[in-house]
Figure 1 (tube, helix red, strand yellow):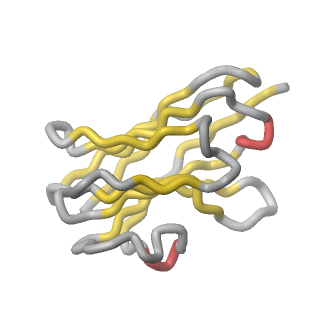
Figure 2: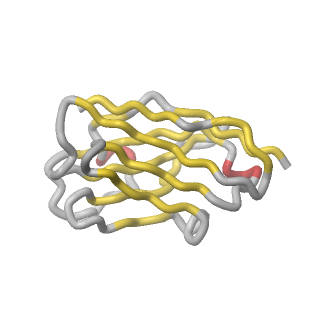
Length: 126
């Protein structure tokens, strides 16, 4: 499966932004999709994940209550709605996918995912 992340940009603190992760090559019915982010000089960190079948969602503590991950079956696309953005949310955001998912046991671990998109930059100014 190929992943195309988009929707990043420059916003001010408190603004909202929605990222998209469009998948091609496979339908995502048995996949898990996640968003990770990497700020300059920092390691890649988990943001949110969704199990396509059933729709279970998982969030990092730092974004819980502000970010929402969702999916659109018809468009084979996952989204990350980001509200109340903070300067510390500034990073390159990557979407990732894992196939044949039964449960989300390692949803927050980058190595669990076999497919990655190219990343989209989100910059939040104060």
